[in-house]
Image (cartoon, rainbow, N blue to C red; front, side, top):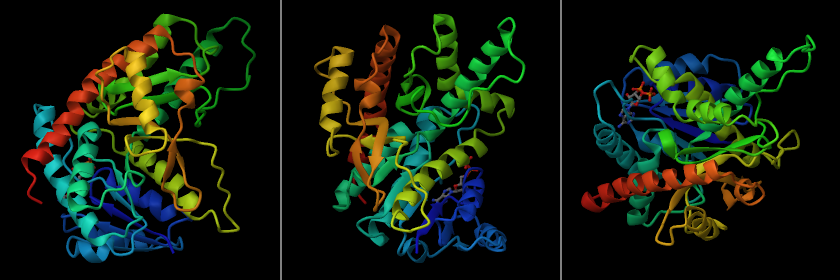
Amino acid sequence: MVKVCVLGASGGIGQPLSLLLKLSPYVSTLALYDINDITKGISKDLDHINTNSNCSGANADIANILKDANIVIITAGIPRKPGMTRDDLFKINAKIVKNLTIEYGKYCSANTKLLIISNPVNSLIPVVCETLKLMGKFNSRLVMGITMLDLIRANTFLANLLNENKSKKKNAIVNSKQYNKQLNNNNIMVIGGHSGTTIVPLLINKTLLYNEKEIKELVHQIQFGGDEIVKAKNGKGSATLSMAFAGYFFTNEILKTINFDNEESIYSNENNLPCYVYLPDLPNGKFLQDKLKEITQNSELNIEYFAIPVKLNRKSGDINSIDLSCILKNTLSPNEKEMIKVACEALTKDIKTGEDYIKNNSKL
Ligand code: ADP
């Protein structure tokens, strides 16, 4: 029995995420919560789909929704509207996410994974972790900020670029094999944070692209891919469908580990997928903190949260350790080192914003 809860399930991300989770063979119970009173109807709608999981949902009694959950995903909040500052968005979503985290702390077991999709991830994960610390319920192996969309975009845009380059070549063989858009962590990885210049794409396979201008354009497209969607939606929305897919993809990897015992499981733990985590307590976390000091040549730097590939425990789906191969086995280019430096400066501020919010509103 594996139970997954989506909090914020009636929203632009929550609905398609719930649909994808209803299709996952690894889920047996899907429980939806949202303050919107359409939530019960959405769960009924999904429950008519003849996959084997059961789906229920409500806009009340969150205790019952969270009970016995293996994974809780928070998508609740408000998306950024035109004219709204990042700070405005942060304050509204921090309150929502803090309150839902308190419910998680109250009603979930000591090994329920907590995945955060609500934005701004860079500051909201510190809000979640500080809230749980105050409740005496914090376990850094369980809390993950979902940055998966950045890696999904990186794979898409890199493949598009390589395929475009290939078709431009003279005497290109018609029907020659296309570069695959699917996840290929040997070619590209994305670390850092989850907005703008805190997103750091690392070209792992440096033989793929030589042209500096092309690399810069690719990096920009990955860092600001979200803006491209806001613009294309005429300011009437942000990334929802691709974000839902990214959230589902990451969740499904955890679900595969939980189902690893199952004979029918086809899980392969080859993808060390990135997420935004609290470093100090995790195996290799301190090492990464020191490595960031070295890369940025700033001995004062104290980055406690960072998006980095993690290895999951094959049975519990908890974070086992941080995988540093994208930094250690890969020779970072001067540009990549500079990007990490820029990201760390911005992250320091974003993290402080989240931590201060709880320090100044410490009443739970
Ligand atoms: P996005 O595009 O990020 O999904 P939406 O506004 O479409 O943004 O969805 C956010 C969802 O979060 C909405 O359905 C909203 O009702 C829900 N929500 C807002 N506050 C809360 C809360 N405190 N608890 C649960 N759900 C919430």
